[in-house]
Image (cartoon, rainbow, N blue to C red; front, side):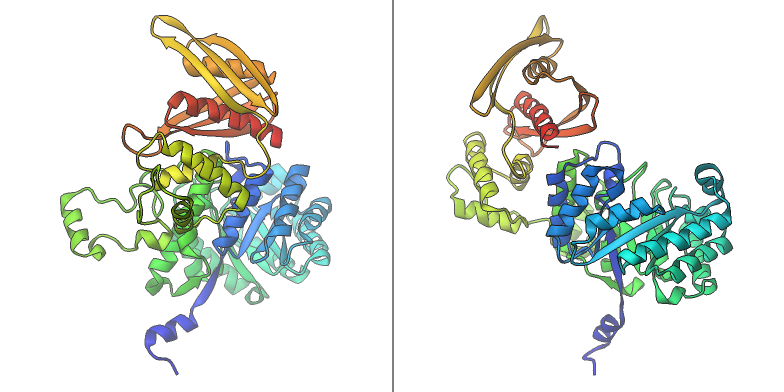
Length: 513
């Protein structure tokens, strides 16, 4: 029947669902907010990654969140689209209204079950919590057949009470039960024991999918998720790069590659297209302006680097000496061709496809135009340069303001001055400002042009590649007129120009929002 034992094992494997909450829990991380166009781009990439469930947002949180969830529900067809909701009817209505056009929709309702949450946050008795779970899961079930219930702070909840809560949710129609470690308190052994107890003492639990949603406050989110899988969990909730509130969530790439690389140990599979992992990670870093550490597993800059001589010798002899997975398996491309000023459009488009990018014609034209400008400044265009160009091209629509030219006068014995000229449609505006540094002077001049109260909350500058002609990447986080924080990004071979472009990019995002 089976050609070999390996094929038989593969056929009998459980498939672990990957529930990605980058657009909901991940976006709640300070400085990680995204506008509508960025959320749509991320959702498309998550679909390419073959994520099973995309938690697109918390529709009741704001009209903007509801619009983003609805837009994603309209365009994504290969993943289930989910919206979070409290155990409140108006939240459930908002969730359903946002997702009801989705090809496959899910409502995710939650209510806290720990003593500290029930007493101090909910101000509800245990019996009132059970009644609310039963009522609101049943209410959600009237809207949608696919219902997930999360017991917030489940890992600090009394186990027998948690069984009662889950039984109420199952009877009311829940199809997935989430046992989250909301504050990142668990150890792997404790979490696995909790899952086993729930499976043995909760009536009807064999008929639903169990899920884990782990936070990383003690650095054990991935380990706890994997322990949950071994104890019977069939869904992992995670985020790209592990972004999320406080110390973040379980990292999708780490969970997935652990299951894939150690399939011999876990005996499970998942549907993720692992060759899209690197691109997804780079996209989140670009959009949020939050880089990952060089030593970040799977996608950090050093993840496949070998500096020690003994390691280098081993890898050259046989990669398996020090590499348990290949860079190509997670989508880190090989440098197959060199691009430069004489490279044509065909070679340019081929390299983008090899990097995993599929751009529409309008965006491809814009990126190619920027590529030709950059090629006049750099002899060799590297993959990171191409990724940088893609990251600064508007997702859709035209930029409100574009930099025309700038003149900076600066030194250690004079006051820095900046003359900035920008275009807004057919109009041109030019202003001058002085400050204690060239970047700040430039920003003050731009503030005069846009006539807004722009506060710079954070600024960073780094090299995208090596060499004296490397591109600089500037990231700014700004608040305009007391609104939400916006991330701006600029890239140039000139650090001042990159800084100015980042500031203007952030301002353009504010007006797009």
